[in-house]
Amino acid sequence: MKTAIALIDGEHYLPVTKAALEKIAQDYDLKAAVFIGGTEKIADESELAGLGVEIVKESSSAEAMEDKEQAVESLIKALEIFKPELVIDLSDEPVLDYTKRFTLASIALKHGVSYRGADFLFNPPRLENILNKPSIAIIGTGKRVGKTAVSAYISRLLKKDFNPVVLAMGRGGPTEPEILEGDKLDLTPQYLLEQSRQGKHAASDYYEDALMSRVRTIGCRRAGGGLAGQPFISNVLEGAKKANGLDNDLVILEGSGSAIPPVKADKNILVIGAYQNLQDIGGYFGPYRLMIADLIVITMCEEPQASPGKIQQLLEVINNVNPAVPVVLTVFRPAPLQKIAGRKVLVATTAKDGLEKIKSHLEQQHGAQVVAITNQLSNRPLLLEAIKAAGDFDVLLTELKAAAVDVATSTALDLGKEVVYMDNNPVSAFENDLDSAVLKLVQNLV
Image (cartoon, rainbow, N blue to C red; front, side, top):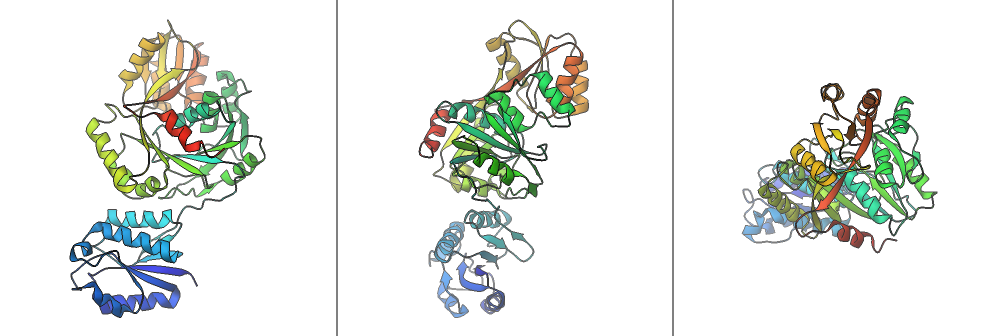
């Protein structure tokens, strides 16, 4: 029989709560009831003794009975004491609103415990403990937060002292996990285009990591993503088994969008886009991702993506959920893989905003003459139109993602233009230092 604890409140008439607990006890091994607040139908918590089950509560004061933090503290205490397999939520509004309920569910999932209510069931992502070498996971709170750029940067940083392999999953990954020897292959535009014409998604993350960092990568696929990050299907476990057989001494697991690789990592780095809606970070299962993070990297910490006030609000959200986690603030700066000084350049990117900053950096720091810039790299029809409308240019400078190969590279080469790929370097902002934070995280792993 599955072990369980129940969440109860003071907004239910106690005989009703008792009857519900007795019903639960018929189907589960009910270890305790966790009182999470409410005073409408009970005058004092001592009345809970008549429920016939052990009660967990953090405080008996009237103020605490209305305090939202009490529910969090009480649930954590019960999870640590009883180590149940399931939390059953018998509470309701007004004690639990939607945001608070997802916070409690996030706490349960962080402890590897399922969370069930009247019409929902949330299970923790299944993370298989199968890697035979140290590992870090780089996961994100959504698509286009710069996760792959951060992963590539960290790979370059760590290969100075370690021998990492990147295990990346994507929505365009191969049927069977595929190894790319990024330090040996000549990943030219022509090579990538040939891969694309063979039916491969040659702008998939494992190609990008291999090209930008020149490390060995393993490409995997996934489809679907649950609210807490579980892929519906993937071949990442097979990819992890391949990683076990290689001579690399560190595995970097890279998530896809907000999906989390279904393999247990020793440490988790969470990438957040400063432009993202605060509700997506502090609500739903954003708190779960914040809770499992050992380091948080916030990208695009500048206007127009995010104002100083928005960044401060984001930091407050993080601090309310996981005050102990180190946080690094960064901005992206384009980094062409070849010299483009003196060339007339058409730039293709997925960046939603900040195109003027990209243009200015390429002109001032790399000596390019940017004649046109498009952010339609993920929209094939509009990208094709933008290239054809760009006028006279010598070089197509593009990120390696979305339609960078099958549309951008193919069209530019057909026009007789040179193609140069562009990395996006996360540059530490303010007083943070990304390098030292990453090295500190992994220093005891290898």
